[in-house]
Length: 254
Image (cartoon, rainbow, N blue to C red; front, side, top):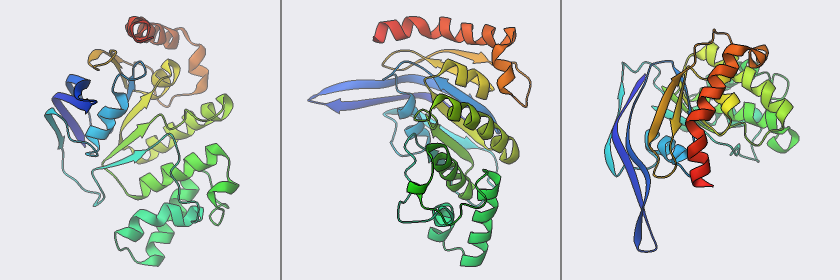
């Protein structure tokens, strides 16, 4: 599904004054695209996800979804930095939750959940509880739970930021593998230039608050992506371009 964002702004009122979070954002996200969003802290990246997910209303502008819906699931589902799993539910019960709420019969929803658990590499952990899993494993559960809802658009707010460097690298490749399998439209927020390049078809670079689109950088790297690409000249050229675009914004906000 294509996401069409036109002249979107967001203003909050705090302590009797207005605070601009986003200003005049216009952007198209293509169907099945993996779009990464990069910008300094406080520039409105997460706010933009909330607006796309209809968890917050924009103060101005429009966000439309174009394309025939076929999944029967929600328009959007969010994957957060904090895993937000139900601690009293097993992995299987967490993943099946969305379809349980939608009234699906027990047998088919559990079969569907088992398939997703296998897809994210957690077969054998169906009966484990979140506290028994590592951070990377918990994030796999969160991703499987999001996919179980069969959303048209998957919104991801720094989902790997809390992981150690080695686990994060593994999860980046796993995320790409899963995306290649399910081909959802993904909007992915990150602070990491390297991650933005490795994952994205395009990188949206945002300015300091109020967030505006400073530049959109195409990532002309072949897929499937691998960690070996990080050391190539092509990868470094795109990463350097992104750093040049964002550097002044980071300094201005510091």
